Amino acid sequence: MLSRDKSYRSAFVLAVAVPFVCAAAAALVLWGRESFGIFFFPCSIKRITGFNCLSCGATRSTFALLHGDIAAAIYYNPLYIAFLGWLVYLYVRLVISLIVRPYRKYVLRLDWKWAAAVTLLLAAFTIIRNLSFYQAIFY
Image (cartoon, rainbow, N blue to C red; front, side, top):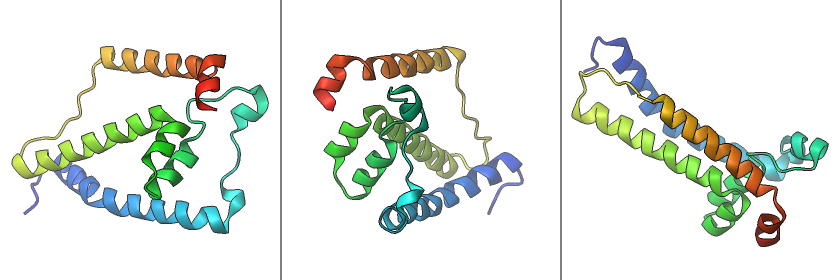
């Protein structure tokens, strides 16, 4: 039985909906790449500036993951794979929290220090990704 707490109901709906949304997105990527070539357009930032943006290669990485090629997915965008791993961790934590403590309020706590560290990591990855030695190794 669902708790009367709105936060719990929202977390429960999220926990149930995520697998269906992921399956629909995976089907769209697998079917859309072969059927709708225009759906997967090139990166505008790379086209305008000539530099790789933070998410350049994420679509190719997703396509490689859906085909089970983890090495190629990491090759296309390693930070994107780490981000997907973090999302899976948060989802598993949400589901465990709903099972173990169903009547407690679920709150995702993020500290400003974590936000600053992630921002610095993203900026460093974007800069390093566009340096010549990184491109010589990965491209």
